[in-house]
Length: 171
Ligand SMILES: CC(C)(COP(=O)(O)OP(=O)(O)OC[C@H]1O[C@@H](n2cnc3c(N)ncnc32)[C@H](O)[C@@H]1OP(=O)(O)O)[C@@H](O)C(=O)NCCC(=O)NCCS
Image 1 (spheres, rainbow, N blue to C red):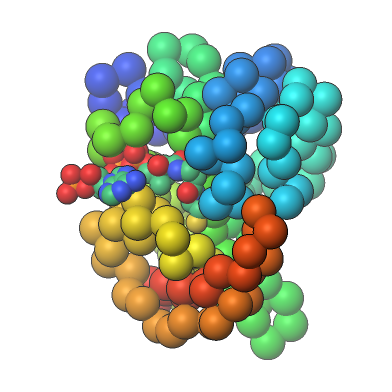
Image 2: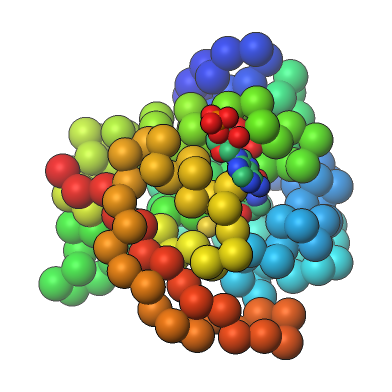
């Protein structure tokens, strides 16, 4: 698959060879500060290799590498929930700081949410966003996500408690 995002960017499946580039671009505290501790800093090639392996084995239909001229510079994907929540999914994403502010994630998120609704039959996509993350909030709002609530002190990261915002898009 190849989803053209314009200007040399696309979404595609993960490749085993992506680990080096993902570690290179993901090894940045400005990225990991907004993600779970499963995406640590430093983010090493070993972390990236294990992640790519996991995606290739278990999440090929729901995770996409963000590619710029053949190099993986970030990712976006969703996790379909279980049991009574099985028509919903949590979405997550990051892109290299070298490529911030070019509209890449807005385009990627727009495509992936439509894919989740149209191809996967989901009705609800949500994102857990730290209150201190204005960039993520802006991207979600540009794609039609609405703020549903605030979970106070739900995140403990970098030695501090942080409120978590829940954004969702429902079809
Ligand atoms: C958040 C993130 C994904 C945004 O990606 P991006 O490709 O730079 O986003 P876009 O270029 O599509 O930006 C969309 C809008 O958000 C704004 N924006 C982006 N980052 C911003 C920031 N840090 N502060 C304020 N606004 C920001 C852009 O200016 C743009 O608004 P505009 O169209 O009015 O100019 C990227 O900064 C990132 O990977 N951050 C670290 C990881 C992360 O936070 N992941 C999400 C966890 S929930």
